[in-house]
Image 1 (cartoon, rainbow, N blue to C red):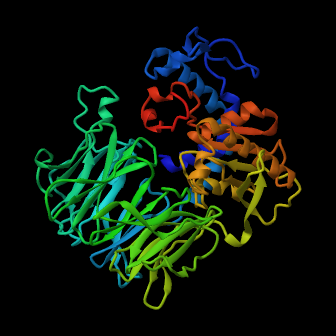
Image 2: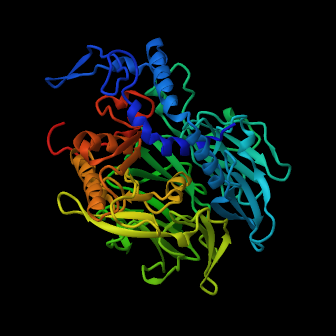
Image 3: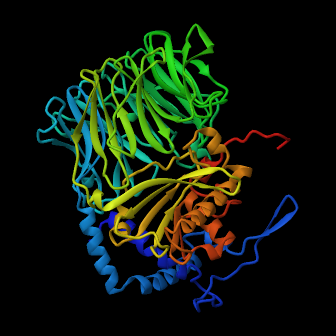
Length: 614
């Protein structure tokens, strides 16, 4: 049976041909002779403007008409894909995927827990190894591939108890955001009897004494509308072994639309509650003293900025925030002066991505032109040193404890799968904790970053990965990827799906567009709402710039993007159809008038500050 990961790669590589099938369905014939979908007569009135919606009937995925249209699409698509060339490509992709890979790592109670994949597993497995002997053979802790026969059930979150005896883990089915939480006795390698449900978007954090963990969940959705099913998110405390019905309610808020994430500091005294509204980065922060009165107090309760809890020392709390700092800074707040922010690290040209307190120091991960730079500061904000990294790439999942003497982190690039690394404060030493082979020889490729000016003069970083043997004469096929939304930064990441393209002599380019988070909140806001056209202009400019520099030509340029990136590629295709040889829009969000009516679309709406009555 073909692995899901292979199917994804096949869709992305062979999906360039699907543009030809985009008009397939029922009704009259299109320009290539394929039947078009039937047009209905639905019209909507938006503030006096009539807008036709001829394909409204396709919004019902279970109707006979929609099912027939899907089958027609599949028949035409398979005519393009079911060729001998596909089997050869499948063999090549399978070989490239058979490479050992690693995931996030955390050190708990003398062991390092990390995710591992042999290259062909549907789901990565959770492993553990003695922290003092990283070369020892790791042991299996949990295998998500046993969750379901088809391999589509995933491990979506996990947390080890402070004593290392219990594992709380969340399981999701078929890519759903809905989760169930189980608790496993690691000594016996068996799950406890309880199952925690209604845990969509849930986060788990153990109490310092290991007696249980905090988690957030929604009420039972039975009989509720789609909107009501995503309201009244609350925080509970679960004691391992007891039924969910016996879980203690810890916190609830009067606003029904906030989602709450609970986190304890390393001293175990306070529970920090961070409330989010949809996908808006602005949040609220409440505190609960676990050693005092069972009454939460508000620390930040106006949703005027993002406040990301770092750690606390006694009654002094440290936050990463974009309050008056679009590229983020670090501030301290004292409980006896909750409205006063003391600046510890000021805003710089490089946006702060994450901050962790380890060994009573700040470990700061910044983005320098969309690539990672890790520095260490003392608690007064004085920079001590930069951590040496293997090259142009991305750092993720920095994990350590306030009193610890080392921290774990992952490093990856477009050609290098994630490496597990560990930094030791004693001796200022960086070591590779775990790594696997590189599928393609790094020495055979050039990885570079260029800058291209957009329509309004804004400089855009663009990563380019190309085989050394391919000349810059404008004849090479180039695949350009972009996203430009939701404050998401496109840093150098290793993705198996790009490898077949590179292995066959193609050039890969990734454009950092406004709407992302590469240069902080101002960069994000420059690509949303009324500024959305900037994102399309950026992508078009990146395309033109790559052509002008002889990386490729119009006929050899293919653009690709998914979800918000699917909207991006679709819009650019409509605005500049002559600029691209092929366009791939993967699961695009293209109906900007009605997307809030379906699935989790309502969570993509953030509160905009109105400059006029709205």
